[in-house]
Image 1 (cartoon, helix red, strand yellow):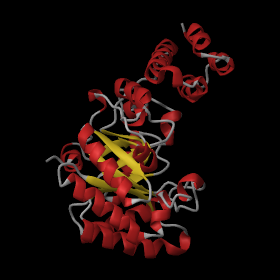
Image 2: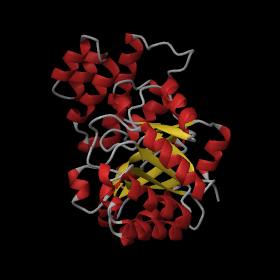
Image 3: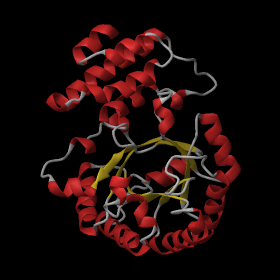
Image 4: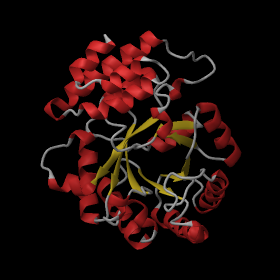
Length: 316
């Protein structure tokens, strides 16, 4: 039995996590991040329980390597029986923890009664948490990622719901994104409310690990917010596509040269192509080229490239 959250909070406070992002934090990108600037803990993309329930083989979305550890599998869905199967698979594959998505505001996810919809259906959320905890039986920790409420009107009500969940279900960790579900990614993350949630949740469970999320641009800012609001760690998400080296940006860090950027972009291209094989979508690589080469003229050439071979020729 191993609780990675307790280990991180003990050894690396404040620790930093790479957020789960569909279509972004896949296997190839995590391999690159592990090489150029690794966070203390990584999450998979958020994985559909519906998808896992339908397939017989282990899907690519749940593949990981040793150098990506510690790594948490995050699932979204609304059916406890599907979460049961996912938890069994995550345990079998050797993940360091399971995270339940209670925060995604995407319409396609909400239509399934999943993600942020669970904010409005706490009974189902509790049933899902209990199902996953029963499967893992203490072997790996179970955590939750959520928001500060469905909308501004129910923030206080949702805090009370979370306090009850934290008190009764004994989850190991919770990540709080400082926006409501209605906000999506608009406006600014409300760190004052994250701080309030943290204080109240730790009153009912002093061992709870709390991670803050929202608008963090660098390590210094994240550490400052952790100290200010008495958190255990912080999570960086969308900033990774503006600065893939964000987890290396300490005092001794120097911005990578154009040569290094090109080498990494080429390595990522080859890894992406090899990993996905015939299913590899060249269009999906372009967001990474923007991340590695923003501000450089060569980015335009890569945006106009028509396939992997053309892109590799440009990079070489």
